[in-house]
Length: 383
Ligand SMILES: Cc1cc2nc3c(=O)[nH]c(=O)nc-3n(C[C@H](O)[C@H](O)[C@H](O)COP(=O)(O)OP(=O)(O)OC[C@H]3O[C@@H](n4cnc5c(N)ncnc54)[C@H](O)[C@@H]3O)c2cc1C
Image 1 (spheres, rainbow, N blue to C red):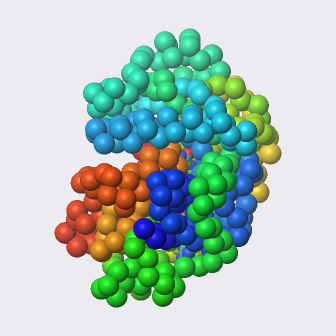
Image 2: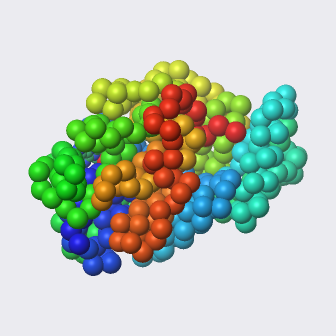
């Protein structure tokens, strides 16, 4: 079976590897010159989101398939981290905080935690005093409710290292990696083609570019790319990962100090014309939020140059678009800001579907909507 995978981010390299490891003849197209890197920060000229992510692995699934995907992804991350010296997974907890006055958000957090617990996720709500005692690095004044996810982690040196490590494994499994090539897709009824060449199956794992990549086929996806942001401060921080739901900011330890993120701009952006630098309002807000919740001076080195933006992808129901869109033409995108943490499992699932080893995941079926509905972008980290 000859398969083309378009897009060499975390999802594409995982799928390409798994397809080849199962015996398929795979060609991977990536328009960037490299597949992954070992950088701790995003490079401005590399646009793919997997290089620009925060590397936070803190799933809180609310349904059975979400839980299965999250658990499988963490297992695969840990497996690779144990074997590849260039990439490691740092286990920690994630603490989610909601203010004492934010009653609706407290209710929503309780519901999310209950739903996750139903699917065996080790997460629980606690009163702020208990959490403050457990994590003395944090200042929980004004917090009304806290949830702690026990099995969480972040990747080091940066998320690009996962891509690089998986790409090496993909090459070892005989994936033919065509980097520096912007692939063009067509589908003339007899099957999918890349740059005019017919394949038995084509997977488009093009992140925020997927809709554009599919445009020549006439296939439309209910997918909106939007900007999210991150920054690195040179301040030492050794506490748990934190999501401050009121401030709309998360942070975690980082090899150079501390990484903070979110900075969602909930507007559809043009994936071929977006601003890759961080915005001043994001830097100011993130530094302020970190300082309010920790005992560190987060401004150290955290200027606009230390911040960057990247693309996340929204769908009408916040669930991925993972499956077949036309005969033998598949997509994997729509991660709502959580595509990195699920990539080892979503890449695996779509590879198995292409190989006929697994049924399509109904909940993620890209054809589940009636046409292309209008919808608003909702940020992925919201409670
Ligand atoms: C600032 C920021 C922080 C984030 N933090 C997290 C986090 O902590 N945890 C988390 O789970 N998620 C996070 N995300 C989201 C995460 O980065 C993405 O969901 C995930 O990386 C998507 O992976 P992907 O492989 O689908 O897409 P991408 O990594 O974007 O890969 C798509 C690839 O397709 C290539 N491509 C596009 N068009 C073509 C073409 N025509 N031909 C060839 N190649 C093409 C692109 O160059 C790109 O490399 C964050 C995102 C950003 C921007």
